[in-house]
Length: 225
Image 1 (cartoon, rainbow, N blue to C red):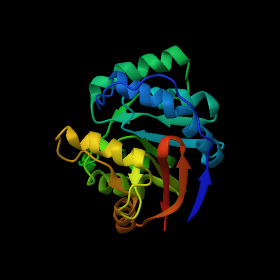
Image 2 (cartoon, rainbow, N blue to C red):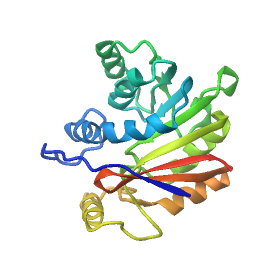
Image 3 (cartoon, rainbow, N blue to C red):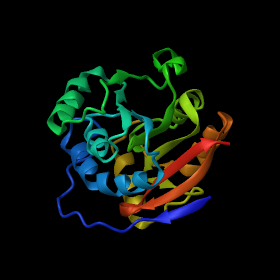
Image 4 (cartoon, rainbow, N blue to C red):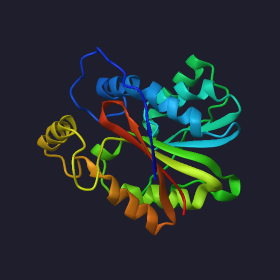
């Protein structure tokens, strides 16, 4: 497993209260904070051409920010909540992104909602900032979907804050986790990267790289074992 270090960025905007609603000020703040560091990594790992699927696209901030940098890639946004689709389309129109497809509904717990591999495979699948407010079981869906839909050289990239080998990587991540847990919502809280790895292994995927990101986050990159 290799690690790539990205440069720190300084964000002056105050953080809104934690709210996982995809249209919330907190999600917009987090997206604007991390979009450039994530883009920097994706520029090094995305293919020059192909198809890329985003899971849990939310308001569509990331996919519409990334798309102009990869004009030969077709980007497919998706989400469990179809109510966000008009927001994704509006951001697409605002950015003039002709390489962003109409969003589709994907429920990671229901394989019947997943795209049919006969309609095409994906060279990359990515998901950003869901595991601190989503059940660990979602990695089973992501891994199974990846095993079904990835091209032979494709990969899954998962961005977020994680524990590593049961430990917090920094005091700030421990404080962040305590803040999340204080909300008292079942399944909220930082997950351990090794638990994601175990679930991915079960579906034939292996952790290939862990990219260290600003603000004590990571990108975990999984590909076929």
